[in-house]
Length: 446
Image 1 (cartoon, rainbow, N blue to C red):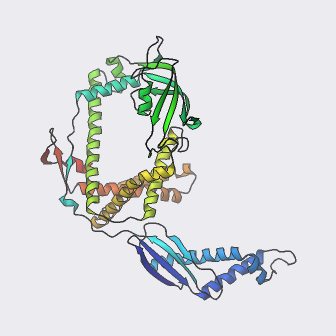
Image 2 (image 1 turned 180 degrees about the vertical axis):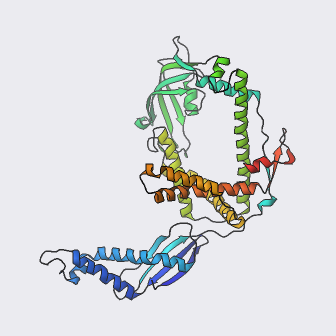
Image 3 (image 1 turned 90 degrees about the vertical axis):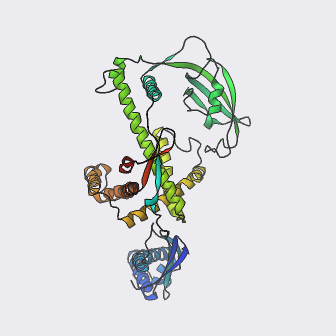
């Protein structure tokens, strides 16, 4: 389509694309749209297809305006973007438009979020430190006790005694703010295992020493930035009734118990060795995570640039969706948990900005270093699409697009991280926290 296209800078990460479509193109589309309406519209006193144009223009002015405007933008935007030679990060956002009038050109503008300009840091000079990894006997014993606890039985105690650390309390409670009951905060038959950190610390400590049937008032003051908007900055009085006390009976730690923990385990010592390896693997992964976080920090320290707000908002949407999904797995939603989404977004925004900036840096490094996703990885996801798209009740193309839009950026980011780590020096701390001289190649391979 013949048109005039101009581009102007709005900010370092946003441009405005302005488009002017000639009046003859506007007139042609107006005539076409009105004629189509004339063929389909029926009005009292007129035969179908014979309604005068002036009446159509008067009675359907809004519909005509909207349809023609949308069609003009739809038909021209793709070509306008190609003419501008601007590479966008997100879909363009309509900024302004003129009215559609016969004999006049139609103009509109869109905002385009673009990649910020910055220099890639010289990551090859980096020296990163990997924490020393070792497994202690105490850590193994802690895991053994956790297994015993998991496979233990729970029973209600008969003898009267005060509630203590490690007990399971079954409570009813109501909440009051300034003497007014808050029904959303009350609970019945609520199970809480003392010492596990699953309840507000002040409230949990206030339960210690209660006996079955006892009622107690416990005051809890919440900070002003508490995510639960119902209690933020307020003091809540909880009226608690201890209905029952339960304890865990742990199974005996012997070879019979060990054999139930997995194939190939015959003795408690076998179980200890398997736990040692599991703990070691977890610590190795955690140590690699520390190295990666150091790398993120170094990259962000050396490169400073603005990021598009819409890109940050998109990242925040993903983060909020993850929170909601985790809560749904526990059978609650944000409203039921008293979480104000606006406050949650505010708390998470700085982290979202860091993530977006890191992703942009990794993308630029990937382009400069020609980092590519291995063909076998791409094939694996393509095979997954072929096997499962019918289960999703969508076409293969739709499922392929959805999967790869979600997966490819993550795969490329991981590949880029592995590439960078293979080109930096990674030194390991010794037992005193000093840095040893040897490069830890294993970290770069993970």
